[in-house]
Image 1 (tube, helix red, strand yellow):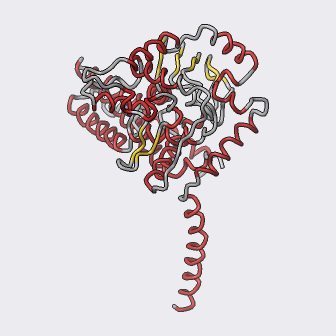
Image 2 (cartoon, chains in turn red, orange):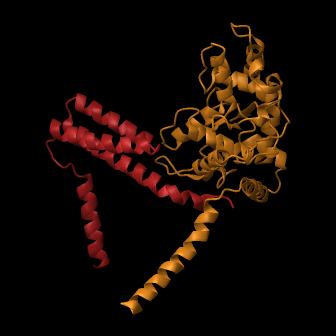
Image 3 (spheres, each protein chain N blue to C red):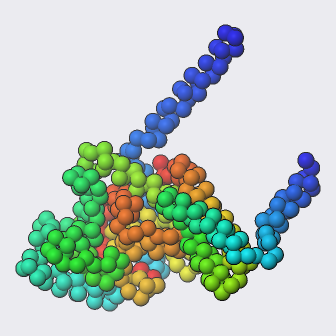
Length: 104
Length: 284
């Protein structure tokens, strides 16, 4: 794959990632997205590696849902899930990576 | 088949041989060598800083900061907490007993021996934890671990140990060595959305500025605890320091005196063995 085509594919993926899945989000969409984010954050909790930003994004999602803005609430839930998954990745990769920083 | 099998077997054996010694070496902690390497790293990085001066944290990093510290020490902001701690320490509990009954030497001049490993419990006991356990054993409610009364009490106990070198022991108990190793792992592990470890600031970047603050070196960083921080407008304990560090890198702090923080304190104190207690301290 040429560099241009690769860049196009990556850009498309990124755009797909930031675009809301459903323009007119429903409560069900929010609930599904929130449950996935909450499960990922709980997993980060068992790894003792939660991020404050995940917590605040989850709280913001709940607040948006309470105000009836399910589209925003679902988008925030997806963002929280991505943050939680990043913290899980961090905890997993650091299981060995920390040794590289050690003073010897 | 046999021809193909032999190279595979040889490759497998080579891989095992190559991997085995490395993993063994990596998993056998050597605290004495660690402490030596730790001290060497900082003394080489800051050849102009006297070894015992590392306990003054950011104030040890340059002449201007050092002058600030000297001036601050004339009217130290921790003085009120120190006085309060002295009074609290000497006041008996409702059952007539006191803190002195819970500690060796009546609790005077013992701060440099904490945290210590309790072989009965199989865990690290910090001074803050020991103080609250003392209270609970005497039917008193425990204090918050992060500030106020706990900071005052530990300030007084630190003051009675000023100048005494950290004397943290790792007994001949595999659980103690595990606790030390876990503390080390926590210290070097990146966490939080900012992807920082304790070492990112306090090993890789001491003396550098992070916003308006000068970062303290990890060597001797706990010798001045508890501290009055201008940023907090008050006193804070080691627990407060650990939890606020985690928050600053956008990590959810663990509960004060969790096993992780207790092990971290054990590791950090051990590698500063020999450096004098300077607490209570003051920091920007």
